[in-house]
Length: 294
Image 1 (cartoon, rainbow, N blue to C red):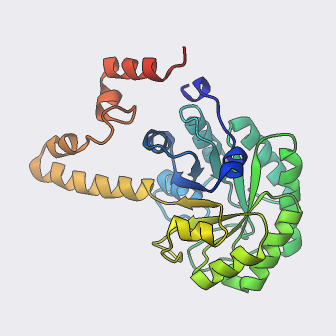
Image 2: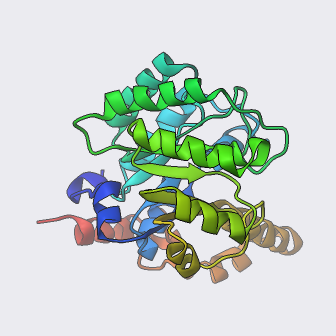
């Protein structure tokens, strides 16, 4: 709806200008909040999407249909270029090709495709396994074939670092770039030393998934850029949502009213995400008029 009123930039265009700092989102309202705050790109988190759909940890329970529905909800309201976590691509290289065709049609601007065995799990959980080098590269080539002539790019993710070591991760990164990926992504790097080595030995654009509650070392965006990482995603929206719901919910239950929640929800008063805009039709119409191009 609103997204069609604004010209969408591709993630590739943003990366050509400079490093990108993108929050992970999981639905239309979290994506819209990221846009309202001034971020330039988003990442549809596989783990957060899975958890909001199932209410359970990310252990491979999300479906392709659920993902496609979520993408369409977000791209219809948010004009920011979005990375989509497509997990393992839902099968072999032929399944990856079909997955990528749907991604192009959905309006997303990038995928990250990983080398875990199915059923996969969150990259910061123990018990992961990875497919062979050959199968992984076949998947990257399949995605590259579908994205030719489009502005959708491939972020090739390897989970091999925690299982087979840094040398294997670096080999897979480099091979994926040669197979057509534009960005490499080593999941769950757990030390600054390893970040520096990967930044030095892997050419081209590199992504870092900032999960400071998981394996990720606490390193600033500037430090990551200095180490050679051009794209950084981070988890924020779900933690903020859950923290706020718990805090507000406790007060509402204690007081038997919702006054606390309403009094404290003042950060987005001029935004579509505000309580006023979501409940007051006149306010909503004013917002539509303001953002609609003449």
